[in-house]
Length: 118
Image 1 (cartoon, rainbow, N blue to C red):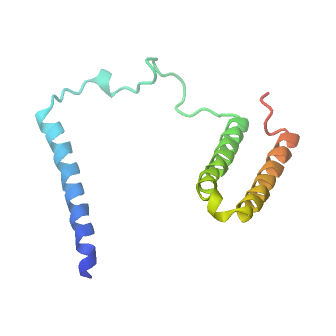
Image 2 (cartoon, helix red, strand yellow):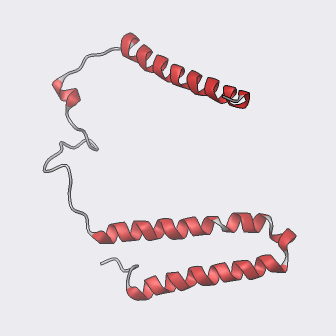
Image 3 (tube, one colour):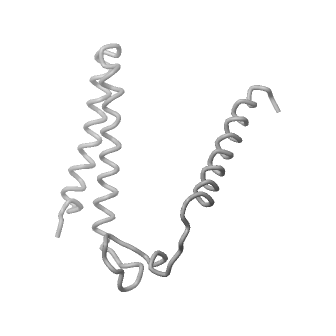
């Protein structure tokens, strides 16, 4: 094994050891009194009822995916803003193309009704 990787191996071993030590200390030094009540599922202070899985309308997932998609695309504005002055006219043209493609997708989804909340 190359010597350059030894610090990474040491760091990995130390982090695993610290994790195991913390878990063991908490288990053996802390109070451990399991009861039936503590073992029951808990959700927002309410007693759970019904099946553990419920069907959700696809609309919720669609809105969540679209939000993540457009949110991640907006992240690309920061590096552009930081290097804007160095790149000059090239940066403006590239960002114009990027925003045009992004807005085309947004308008397409809007016209298809993906943004409607029924």
